[in-house]
Amino acid sequence: MANDTAGSIRVRFAPSPTGHPHVGNIRTALFNWLFARHGGGTFLLRIEDTDTARRVEGAVESITDGLQWLGLDWDEGPVFQSDRLPLYRDAADALIQRGAAYRCFCTPERLEQVREDKARQHLPPRYDGRCRDLDPAEVSSGITSGTPSVIRFKTPRHGETTFEDLIRGPVTFENATLNDYVLLKSDGYPTYHLANVVDDHDMRVTHIMRADEWISSTPLHVMLYSSFGWNPPQFAHLPMILGPDKAKLSKRHGATTVIEYREQGYLPEALFNFLALLGWSLDDKTELFNRNELVKAFTLERVGKTAAVFDRTKLDWMNGVYIRALDIEEFAHHAMPFLERDLPESVPRPIDRQYARRVLTLLQERTKVLSEVAELSTFFFEDAVSYPEQQLIQKGMDASKVQQVIRTVLAAVDGLEKWEAETLESSIRPICEQLGLSPRQVFGVLRVAVTGRTAAPPLFDTMEVLGRSHCLSRLTIAYRRMEDSWSAEIG
Ligand code: GLU
Image 1 (cartoon, rainbow, N blue to C red):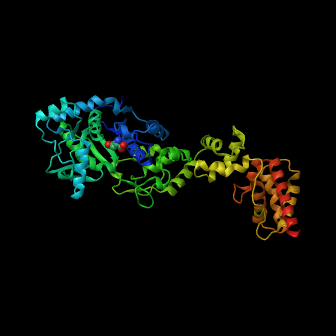
Image 2 (cartoon, rainbow, N blue to C red; image 1 turned 90 degrees about the horizontal axis):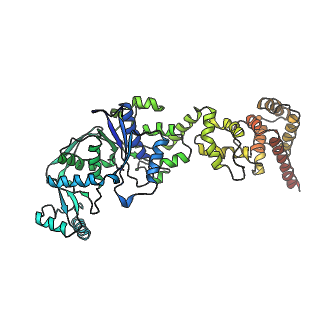
């Protein structure tokens, strides 16, 4: 591999397949990817699937789909930790040999008892170290009798562990506050800590960039590297992502998985840009960056220490900017699947592409997310429109005035050779003055009659795209509805 030379940057995205990747996971992937691409390094994908109880069906596909959708291509992998179990077992044995780990035969019941005792004494729920210094004979009899056991790290009881975080600077933990963490479980599967350290070493990872929440695991990892006699990679813990209420971003802030953003009609380029600014900035003001600009500009020095706030309004704005920048072909390409998916069932499928393209031309300016296009354009596709008839009656008008408007408009457009926005406008606009009404009143009547809405794309363009026969029949229907309301009023 071209980039795979000694000394060059190697980073990894190491998700656990315990669910669909959320925006926080993907922000981690993105920062690693940007860092690798910026430095001409290698980006690896490793699936940390050793927690068999928490594995979720379909999560791996969801991770790879999400990465692909955002264009976060990986150079190596995916490597699955579940394919590498012997490596971790050997590593755990090696630590026992070195006196850095020990076998623990405590039963789950005893461990529960220890937890309860500690809780009663208001102490942290740490293992009490009963098996730390078993004599070798006891250990071998435990093994030969087949007593279930785990392998634990022999965390030093005194002193402190310090590491240099590229974002936070020096970070120090008192060893006495740490546990004798389990490295290998009784089923022979490694815990996250062991597999993660063994793999980062084996895969020659140079920089670990991961979410803040892992920082408390790092002192153990640092001690593991040193017990193995390996040089640790560099660490960079990325700032947390908060919701607008400053609580950790979660389900109750709305969509959190990447899939949901795709389904709601965000463009990958827009989400990419938006996620890059969650914890990184070039100059605290530039907001819009394309992929190449981000690759060029991204450095760890500009990653912040303070938590980033996920601002949905900003994402919507940004998505709108990216949508408007598309040419109509691209916009149609992105929007068609949403029309197919979201237009009412009564609209025949497949949707007529030529016609849809003309409709979409009118919508592009006002679309923030693609999932809006069907709702914004239903009246273009359905045979009839429905609306409360009161909506036809504009301020300062009554039903008969509405009828007069419609009658005059029908007469004016009757002989039109070309049903085009310009000719429609030049035949209809003079009617305002003729009837002593404002354009707001006249166009308001027509807009409701033709679209069933009080807000829609520009009226004459809409009428052009909708076509002569739909417009005429909708105007006639509106006229009749006024008749009914009128006779109801006097009757
Ligand atoms: N498997 C961990 C996760 O799901 C990886 C943390 C790390 O990058 O070390 O986030």
